[in-house]
Image (cartoon, rainbow, N blue to C red; front, side, top):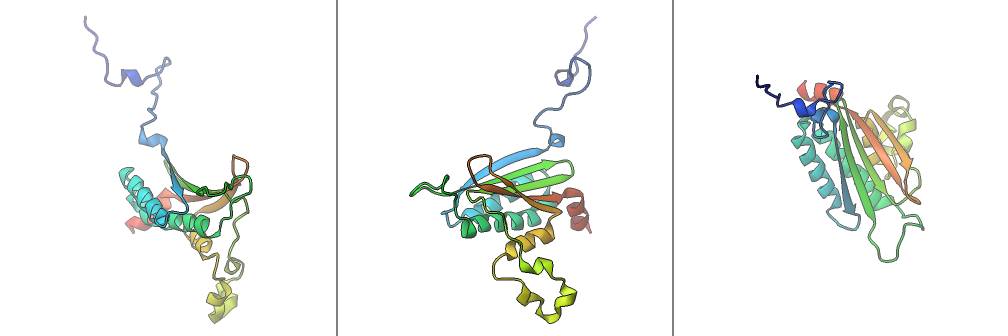
Amino acid sequence: MEVQQSKHAANVSMTGAPCRSVHDPANGHFRVLTLCAEDPDCAKAARDTVGSYLRTWGLVHAVDDAQLIVSELVGNVVHHAVPDDVLAMPGASRCIDVSLMTRPEVLLIGAAGEDSDPPELAAGEWISRESSGDFSEALVSEWGRGLLIIQCLADAVWWSSGLRDGGKTVWVRLGLDRLWAEYSA
């Protein structure tokens, strides 16, 4: 008697439980893009790459918010970050690492730069629109609007110290279910 092996037999553990491949989209996705902060097109490159990955992964509903967030995060590193002395090399380019991770219901975006100073929240974040009346736009400083935009789009924003001798990563979490509901409405 000939036993036919299932096409999924190689995907079963010794206990008989199915094992997921690292390529299974249910396990999520992870990509890191390293950019040169001195490149005048680095924000555009980050935006385009993130959009391309999200479309490939079937997350079209997250593209617009993710591209705006990435653009603001990269712009912050380019325009505001001053590299820590430990990381600054005379004549060296500043690096920006953009991380993109998905899990079944979550999209995480991170932008790592060579500056370890905590990100500053805009003053307008602490003052309600109701109490500011017609002057609400004047309360938001010239700088910091990017983080305010990110906070409005995201489910969470936080930062972590760099794993090396300095730097930091600003992280943003987007709920994919929420984005899908907004996209399909």
